Length: 224
Image (tube, rainbow, N blue to C red):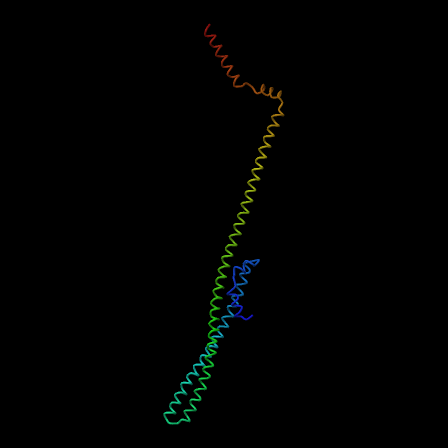
C-alpha cells in the first residue's frame, strides 16, 4: 500500500469504531496517534519533495517560454533585415522550445494536482491527529473519573456493610445483656433476699413510723 493510500485510509477511518473494537481504547489511541504522527512526517517529506520537483519544472518551463519569446524576436529581426533563411532557423529553434515548454506544462499540471492532494492530506491528517489527541485526553479523563467513582462506591459499600455489622453486634449485645439480667433474676434466692432486707437497716418507712410514735408520745405527756 502506498503512503498516499494509507493516509487516505487513515483520514477516512472512523476513530470511534476503531476504539469500540479495541480491548484497551487508551493504548489503541496512543498507537493510532503514534502511527499517524509518523505518517504525517512522511507525507510532509513527500510533499516537500514533490513541491521541490514542481519548482524545478516550473523553472525549466519559464526558461523554455523565455527562449520561445527570444527566438520569436530574433526571427522578426531577421525578417526585418531581409534574411529569410536566418528567420526560418530562428523560427525552427522557437518551435523546438515551444514543444519542450508544452511537454513541461503537461507535467506541471499533473504534478500540481498531485501536490494539491498531498497538501490536503497533510492538513486532514494533522487535523485528525489533533482530534485523536483530544479524544485521548477526554477518554483518559473519563476513565480516571470512572475509576474514582468506582473506588468511592466500593468504599461506601464497605462502610455500609460495616454499619450493618455494628448494628447486628449491638443488637446481639443487647440481647445477651437482657438474657444475663434474666438469668440473674431467676437465680436469686428469695430467702437470701429477705435476710438481706433485714440486714439492710431501717428504711424510710421505719424512720417515718418512729417520728409519728414520738409525736404521739409527746402529745400524751402534754395532756397529763
